[in-house]
Image (cartoon, rainbow, N blue to C red; front, side, top):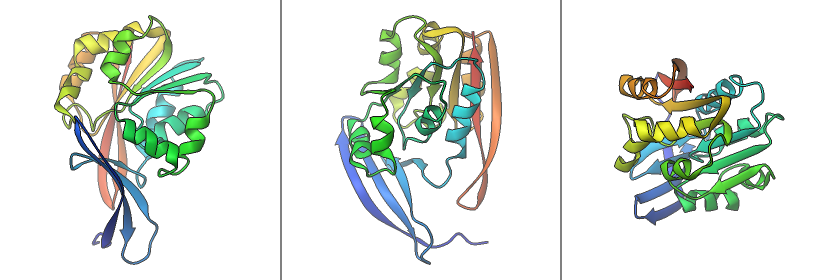
Length: 229
């Protein structure tokens, strides 16, 4: 079956030292439902059509610990992971680290559905910073969960400098800031033996989970890498 013909309308655009960030609306020509798409330097990052893996990331992480009181999310995206985390009444604190100020501004301005409501939640703190630096500066045993959804995975980097996030020093910081019984979950668009190897060099328990989804009428699968000290 052929994919429906679509048109795109730019919603917002920003430039930074990392390049171009574009939020655009996807409009089916046949009048079907519209959706939003986020691109960085021309690379597809995520959209509002297929969000099951972002939600699965949150659910999988929240199920790992008995008391997920404090959660750190690396990557704001379009807010779907944060939305699911905040839906859990056990969560008392949700810190979101996002390197692109424009994306935070678009959320606050309501260009992303539910953005203002999500960021107004009193449990939310947004930090505009590199997640690698933020984890290095965080106090030991600060979080019950650390969720990393910064790229399309280590094999599909949005920015080349992000490679450091999937290497032992940054992963060691992720382990250091976890409370006893805590867990790290990393989202990846594809299976990554290299990431699994790096995780196993730092964490005693590592489990790759495959999630099958449909993306624009195509069968796809994504991966969640779960690691525990």
